[in-house]
Length: 376
View 1: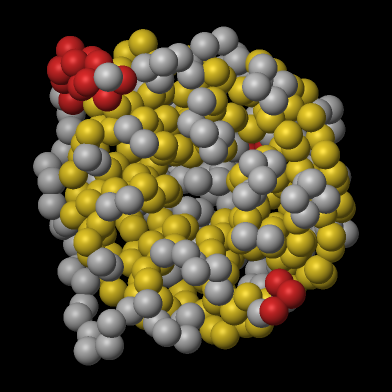
View 2: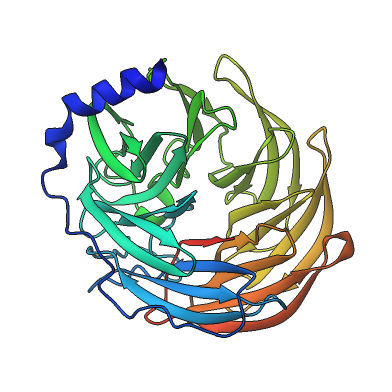
């Protein structure tokens, strides 16, 4: 019933699709190889003169082989004050089934692609409903985008088989200080659904240092947010573990912390461990393990997470300079880490006990300062 009503809603707002770009992949096609890849990795370069998604085949040994490059139809952006992390966000590139969604922060648009193996076909380019989109969340037939500038905002869409339809009533302003500076530490960082899809969570970094939790109505409309402030912590990237703990990086104390998101939208901290590194800003959960990226130290900090949210340090592993966004393969065996100083993706094997073994790296075209990576 909910889906049927959403379809009716989609028909009522189809006019919002004006400005949608033409479909089709309009860049270098994927190369064909004799050996079948074990998976794929897609990386966004956020180039200001034309944002691109670079596709890689994940080979059986975990190393990457470039397969194709695809224009998003929009432009990237460099937030004021950023050096190796131009968007200062997590989840600027998100995959949902056979769909891939990317932000074009310099164009105030988002792009929807169809994924077929290591190939992308562009479906749409449409307005983000705000200024400087930096993060996307997808769950079922809902997609939400987080806009970073002008005090921040979120905009919701119906996802009809990868075709997005903006719903005007699903826009909310965050009400953050639009003049807080520098931008890269004072714009919101990420939007994500809770595992059951009933809520949206937004991390605000230094601009209120909070998690904003939006309850979603029956059809998907966000209510008034519950604001959970953690003074001085500067919450940045986050993911949910298998026990539904919210696991986040904290740029203030350079730490990793786990939280419980309660039914009423309140958030309680469960555990916290400092990394001993600098600029701890991105995070990825890989089953029982958590890896945090430390942009200022050129390293990844590993942790084992317990069912109760407890965090056990596993040590630090060196990366190339400017460690930013990261993703793990669908089988949990490999970790891929973007490093923004030279636009390199470092490749690691996840060994027994969660330790990391470096197995190689690839350089992403126009990838200096890039953020946005997904793996399968």
